[in-house]
Image: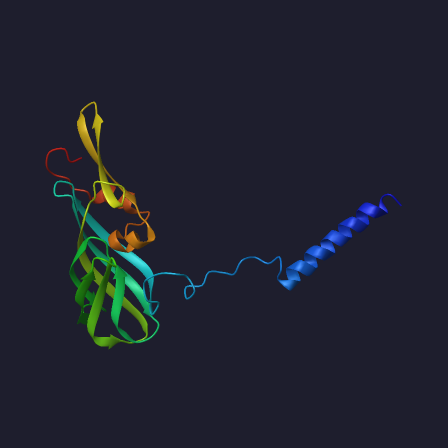
Amino acid sequence: MASAVPDLAAMLAATIMLVLSLSGIAGAEPGYSFDTTPGKLPKAVIPLHYAIELTPDLTSLRLAGVEIVDVEVREPTARLVLNAVEMTFAAASIDDDAQRADIALDAAAETATLTFPKLLAAGSHRLRIGFTARINAFGRGLFYVDYPTDNGMRRMLSSKLEPALIGAVLVLAAIAVALTRKVKASGPGAH
């Protein structure tokens, strides 16, 4: 009889767990939903893939870049709104230069609005943006740190990207590899 009590308790616990999981009370949190995720950008256009080329200038502390973004337009629109913190846009075009956008920056909202002459149809598109940004002297976005070594001062680049800043500098995990391969530093103290 003594062994029947633990077996009964185990069966009761298993039954309760089964009932709870089937009723949804003990269920996991809902899956990710783009539509319900908070954010300041419109949800009519979804970025799917980013390719970026960055050319940092450690003397002027400027970062030139070209970004290509594959986007899914969910409903026809002539406007794309992007995060843009302390950036200057040289040009923006869609679908291999089929249309060039007018660019309006909103420094207070930290956004850029790209307005195309014609509606972009729902479906896949490729956005190309040329930009420059400042390399900061503090821990926001892409920033530099000067540090002493036995051979004098050295400069390194690092990043701290908050969600709003990712669109500004668009530095992904591969930045360390890209910078290691592409940095052509010039000028005193640039390494």
